[in-house]
Length: 148
Image 1 (cartoon, rainbow, N blue to C red):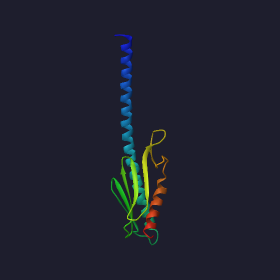
Image 2 (cartoon, rainbow, N blue to C red):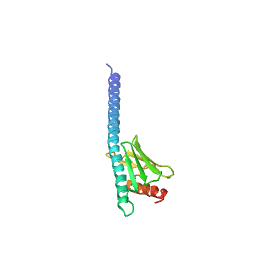
Image 3 (cartoon, one colour):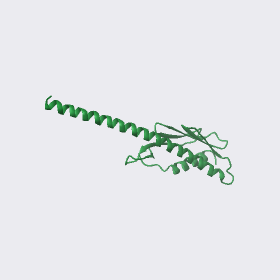
Image 4 (tube, one colour):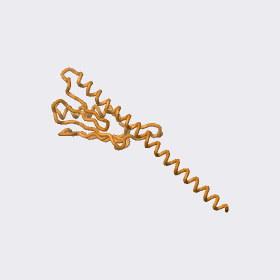
């Protein structure tokens, strides 16, 4: 063995170890993002249900809004109108869009916080999202489009 071969073997081991650690970290990050992303999606759907229920408890609003929620999507409806706002969750992103004459669009992304220890919801520009404000805007848009 020469000094060169010893050092080349050492560098090769270090590269393989660094690659292994990077791949392991990427897999852990992917799993964490998926897990926390699903949890955030569930909380987003729950917030929409709660907001619609709150609106429906106001005098004269019984049954005006309702939500159909499944694991990968959610749709908010308004009374007898055809308009709706639908949201889907896939690949750590939530996309909301208006249907049947309701003009609404929002894309939200599950991303790691700057310190990399948690996951939050971001908009297209990478800014944190106040989902309660988005939910309020979504419901207001649906109500207005439906003549409420």
